[in-house]
Length: 312
RNA sequence: GGUGCCAUAGCCAAGUGGUAAGGCAUAGGUCUGCAAAACCUUGAUCCCCGGUUCAAAUCCGGGUGGCACCU
Image 1 (cartoon, rainbow, N blue to C red):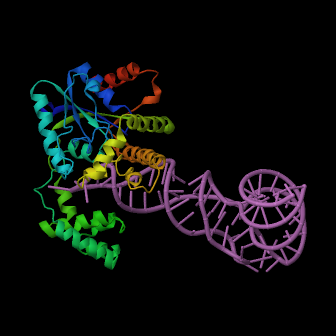
Image 2: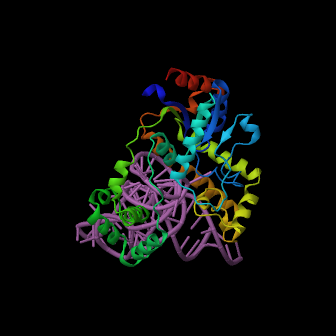
């Protein structure tokens, strides 16, 4: 069984930790192709803010799953897993190694653990109705309702986390099954991948934050403001508008705040995002952590990483 | 040199006699179809010294620092 699994190398980690350059170097060393695991780099035009790898950075290594969707397209984990699996299988069938790169924890874990998503069952009207009820009756009312049909799920949710409570109710509404049942069934199939995952991190948090701050400055030099202005004038879709880098500059375009204030906030939001990414990867004990501030130079780190990959 | 105002957690800030609201940040965490999102948890004895009082961040005196105005 295990022999038939597809080997998969994953390089994950917080933003600005150096995933892109490491992945390219790894691909070069082992004959790999990069597969992005990033919820925002999938969009066309959102280049600077999402730090999409440039042609120069890619150094001729094929990068899949980047910049193919329209900014107004609503994307989801389910779609990601479906397509990413196909891409990885294709790379493998051509005798190359797939190297997954990215920082979207939900996409990563759903793909690697082969979460099975059932056919689409969203009901936006029902969601909207529940949202209005939450406003009128209070969030607790929705959670109480969920507790009546699925006490297990309700126990895990905080009433203020309205989005999740609504989703749980929505699943019951559209499928007749509780989210607990459905989630239980989603893990039935074993993963087709034999994954070796590496998470980039910094021993000194400030080291990472300095890199983040610096990178935002570079994005600004590269024209982030103009890119953001374009999306301010042509608003993004439901998924894409969540990207960090545009919404933080809107108060400046609206004349409510100075550019400097917005930039400070943008840096702060990026730092907070990096922290959240880390909590996601830290809880997966299979992921090996590599600390970027342990190495004097990139090549030393690359050697250490390749050692982990070869050993596994 | 004089007069007035102010001094509470990293920042903003409420509280005017009974043992310190709140917001932001920070740190940690949750995560199954919007996830770069959403959500949870997380800290102080109130500039210093002395006094009044059963009791002071809160009143009085002095000091230090800042701001404003005046000569």
